[in-house]
Amino acid sequence: MYYRPTMRVQVINPDQSEPAVQLIDSDGREIIEVAAFLRTLTVRRFSPNTVRAYAHDLQKLLSFLDGRVLRSASLPRRWPSSS
Image (tube, rainbow, N blue to C red; front, side, top):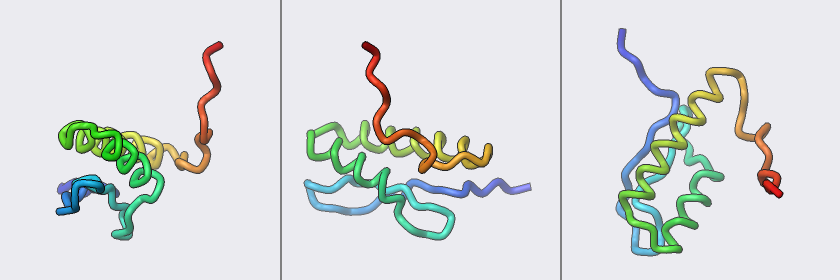
């Protein structure tokens, strides 16, 4: 049986101010929240390899949550402070 992930990391050819990858959902649309996060990393001049690694990590996290009927919308926008 062939496994096809519901999301995929797609390599794109952007300019220097945009990430070199994007996370695409099962309908072929870019996941906006992930795009904003990857853009923030790129603007802060993180290595392209680091940005790509984060994209893959987020793909795995969102696939895990999707398999448990949890959606990213149910996650808090900001995590509570540890203080």
